[in-house]
Image 1 (cartoon, rainbow, N blue to C red):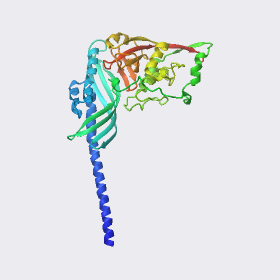
Image 2: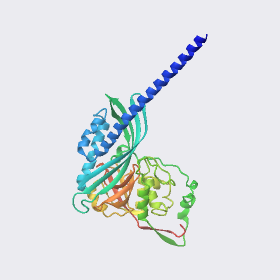
Image 3: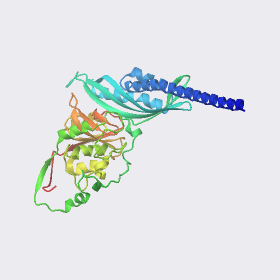
Image 4: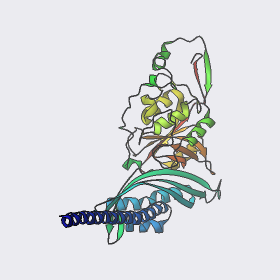
Amino acid sequence: MRKTSLFVTMLIIFNFLLMTSSARASNLTSANYILNANTQIKEYVNALNNSLVDEATQKKMYDFFADSNSNLANYIASRHSIYAEWAKNNNVKFTNISVNINIGNMKYDNGKIFANLYTITTVTYEYLSGKGAGIPNTFKFSEAHDLVLENKNGIYKIIKDNFYDSLRPDLSEDHVNMKVFDYNIDNNDNNTDSNALMNQNSIIPDSYKTVYYQTAAAAAYADKWTDNSGSRGTIHNPNYNYYTNNDCANFVSQCMGDSSAGNLPTDGTWYPYSLAWINANSLYNYIVNNRGWLRAYSTSTSYLSSYAKQMKVGDLVFYRWSTSGTTKDHVAIVVGFDSAGNPLVDAHTSNRWHYPWSLYSSNTTFWLVGVNASVTVPQNQ
């Protein structure tokens, strides 16, 4: 009886050790797969960014994909042409590009690696001649990638890369059909009472005052709250909502209207989080009809070039990801100028810092909008 009991006990211990050993081996194998994929991911992301400015790297991008003839592979490889065209049209050369990669969650499942990562890319360029030639200009943009890789003959290949492309937002984001978010501003002590906002137009004031647009503060606010960590908007003013993939108008409205920024007064149409505050097309209509004017619009950046040089810090650039139609899909705020005097903008979704206003695909329409230097409001507002 004792022998039987001892045998059973030893058998249980043996099975436990065997299972533990197998689990450790499995975990070790998964860890090795993830480690190998981690290296491949970093190589891919570095090449992805270098390919924007280097044609030789661009031609090698197909090697990273499981199917070199896939739409994804062809699209990724084609991004180089947008930078090349912009450089040619603006007489510019790119002198440096670097990327900071922050890999988040990674897991191994049934021969595939699933990973999400966030990147911040820094690009430097110089004009080849004319005003500002030879002076370095730097801009940054962030991207979030959701990757799926598959082992092909011992090498991990990309089979999926879902990301918001700052060069071709028309393929990855829809501002036009954005949700109108419900928000009770009475619950936020930092905002003016909604009833007062809606009724202020019915009040006949005894006197008026002039409020000036604090453009330098608006630009400083934009720089402060432009997310350059590549972390999908974790750096934003916590006093405001953040709208994933649709934060452009909300961000620009903050730059103009926050008391620490542009300090423009709100009214019954434009206030957090009214449609005019959070929607690019509605914000355009509000500004042009109430607080500013349209300088020019076109699909041709060469036509707009002279108008762009007349813009001021605090002015706005609206975009449509098409050469037809008039609905605005995106908005950015002018925060400065490069060495040749061309506007640089900050924006959310995806986040851009001191980004050249015209560095987008040729399938884009631009509206250059001036914002009034001051506004007259009731004395008690």
